Amino acid sequence: NADSANALYLQLKAASVKNQVQIVRDLGAVGEAGLDALMRFLAEYQQTTVAAPAATSDATSKASENKASENTVLPLVGTIYQVLFSSGSAAATVFLQTHFPQGVVPLRSAAEVDYAPLQQLLAEQNFQAADQLTLQKMCEVVGAAAVQRKWLYFTEIERFPIADLQTLNALWLAHSEGRFGFSVQRELWLSVGKDWDQLWSKIGWRSGNLWTRYPQGFTWALSAPKGHLPLSNQLRGVRGIASLLAHPAWS
Ligand code: UYC
Image 1 (cartoon, rainbow, N blue to C red):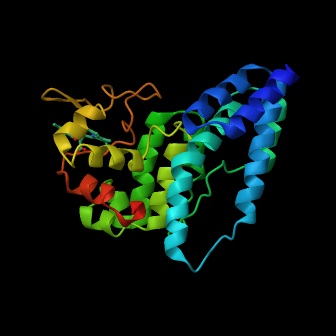
Image 2 (image 1 turned 120 degrees about the horizontal axis):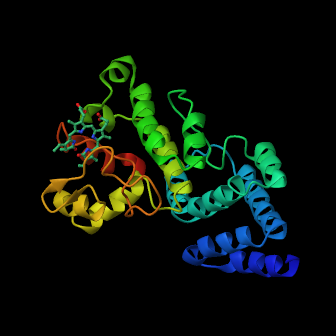
């Protein structure tokens, strides 16, 4: 067991992103030795991110680093976190509480909004409650009027702080093996030439000319199509999601 865990650990460090998720699952299935290897990987990851400067004057290089690490590192470290979180192992629980009490995503906010409750729901893979809380937190970021209204004007989304949008997106990416999040929806939207109708069917928000019914028609699990979550209500038009997917946070 310890030998196979060690071999998997070495494979994990060398593997492509796609294979990494499978290797993490395999490590989660070989018992305490596998969990130990995953804890070792996360501890090393934490050292490299903590060693990096928190703020840099070179904003453009920071943005591109963020983007690269979101696409590759977050799904991996998030999946490791998920395997440890759901393992039921006492050692893994203590490890996470000690080293990652707030999860693997830095909960940055320009509006002093607390994203820990969202991190918790996503760690529990309670995607339906997490989706609701995502909208609520976005309203909190914008202010009291939006909290009371319970939805956002597209002009408010245009001005939405980059840090908060990136935190929300990183949380969804990390806890979905990279399947959910606004940046995933954006990639799919670009891949269909910004054609909304094609996007809706691709992400399971519409089939034929039938809108998916909220909430029971949606799939609140990782088995959903890529980009299925988080949701954006189109009742008041497409300008909101258009502003979201064209936001400077992704460029
Ligand atoms: N709903 O149909 N949606 C609601 C979606 C639409 C409607 C909430 C998504 C189409 C009504 C969320 C789709 C539509 C309400 C979503 C979808 C529609 C409601 C809760 C596929 C009719 C309740 C948060 C595109 C044809 C009343 C919120 C109201 C709620 C999401 C109807 C997350 C992705 C065009 C009547 N729908 N919504 O914003 O006023 O209320 O909201 O998008």
